[in-house]
Length: 91
Image 1 (spheres, rainbow, N blue to C red):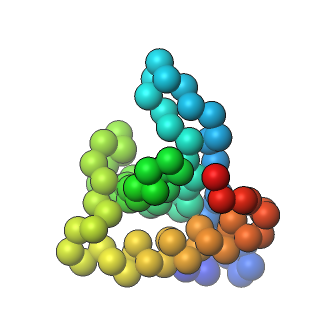
Image 2: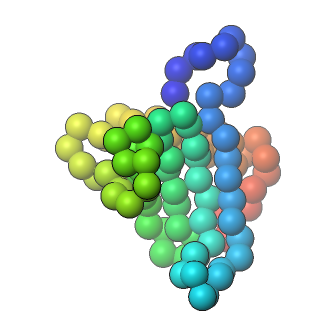
C-alpha cells in the first residue's frame, strides 16, 4: 500500500495451514500491511478485511463495506502477487 522506502515491500504474506479445532482457527492466508490485514479463509473462500488502526483487537471485518472497495482490491492484487512470488499453491 504505497511506496514507503524505495523498493521495500509494503506488506507481508502470512499462511496458516493447520486447523486447530480447539481454538477454531481454520487454514488461511493473509496480506498484512501496517494498517490492514486481508485474510482469505481457505476452506470457505471467505474474505475478511481488518483495519488494525481502528480495530486493534481485530474483531470486526470491514470487507464489503461501502467506501472500502479500493483498499480491498489493492490488497487482493498484492496477495495474488505475494502468492506467486512465494509459489503458494491453492489449498
